[in-house]
Amino acid sequence: MLEALRRVLRALVRPRAMFGDSRSVPFRVGLAVVVLLCALNAAGVLYASGVVADATTGSVQIDNPARPAETVCEDAQSPGDFFYEYHHETCKNEPATVQQPLASYAADTISDLVFAAFLVPFAVWAVVSGLIHLLIGGATADDYDDRVRFSVVLAVTAIGLVPAALRYAARPLLVEMETATLTPASIEAARSLAADALTPNSPVWLALVAATAAWTAVVWWRSWQTAFGVSSRRAGTVAAVAGACFLVPAVAPVQFAGSVGALGILLVAVGIPALAFPRGLERLDLALDLIGTRGGERVEPKPWRVALQQLSGLVMVAVGTVLLGGLALA
Image 1 (cartoon, helix red, strand yellow):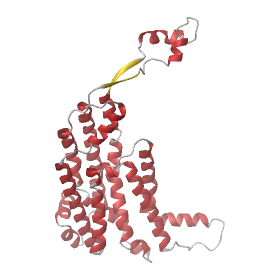
Image 2 (cartoon, helix red, strand yellow):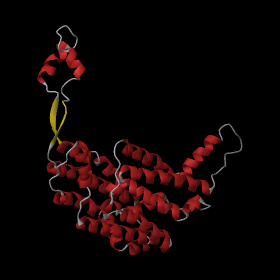
Image 3 (cartoon, helix red, strand yellow):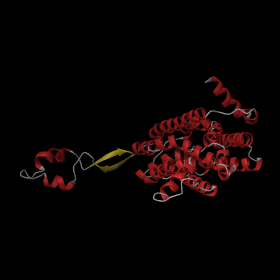
Image 4 (tube, helix red, strand yellow):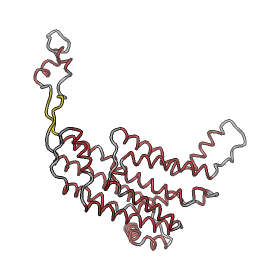
């Protein structure tokens, strides 16, 4: 365990030296790193929900959930009616409307993002790993066994995500420092202000995001270049684009609500197998097509079909990550 931690720390500071010694990071270590980041991100968002709720004032008048529908209460006035026995006292004692604190809507809005916050680091990990895996050339190699294994790419890419821990740990603290009293006038306003509060309006937050994004990009650039023999320009371009995406949450966060998040989860779940096992899925597809035929036992998918399968998985995971909130919670 200590040796694995030393490898991770060395890769963060001197990625070329780490991977230049023909050493690597086991996949289980990369997976553990990402799971810890997922938990830290979710915990930070959950803590922020309480902070925002405490800062939100005011209330709104809503229909009393404890009171039956008005049509039921009208029928419950007559002693001979079916509803009289069950609802007469409730309709008599419960008011038609009650005051509901807007703080509850603000807290619920952020609490609904906790699960998405847990999944976002994992989805980002898959997208960036899939992108570099597709571009390093292995996806179109004539001999499939010569390509770099996707699990190895995942392990190396996971190390570059470690600086994100600083953002995830600092977010709830800065939200607490920056969030003043919120006085929304409606439920919609309370939800909007709560979502906005997750992005602290602070130069400190912007500087922290920029610094950690740059650190991540440099680690990815040097790690991919050394571990996989990727050209400096190609590795640097992918690392720079991926790192720049981390700046979006600090400048103009993109967050979708409602069932769109569920669609994002579905796209990520469907896209990951195509991203990680493109040849296996192509083989399965060919085997199903050849049912009832002869002489097709040795048919193999061409490299371009494998690459196309992986590209489709990459697109699905990338779109799913955005819908899930990857440009707001990463």
